[in-house]
Image (cartoon, rainbow, N blue to C red; front, side):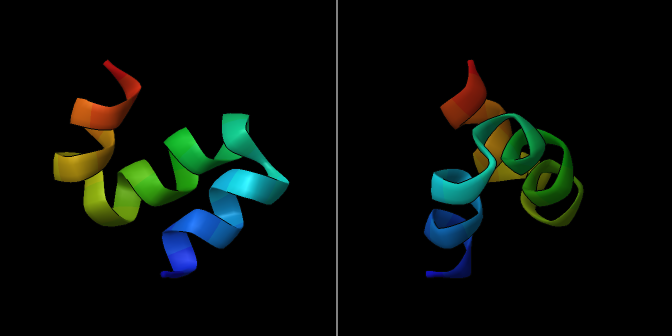
Amino acid sequence: MAKQKFERKKPHVNIGTIGHIDHGKTTLTAA
């Protein structure tokens, strides 16, 4: 759930911040 909050506030930072935490799911979402 925290991922959605980050993505809504900073979508560009979400890729880097969340990507570093859950780069597995973020990679699929970003791609």
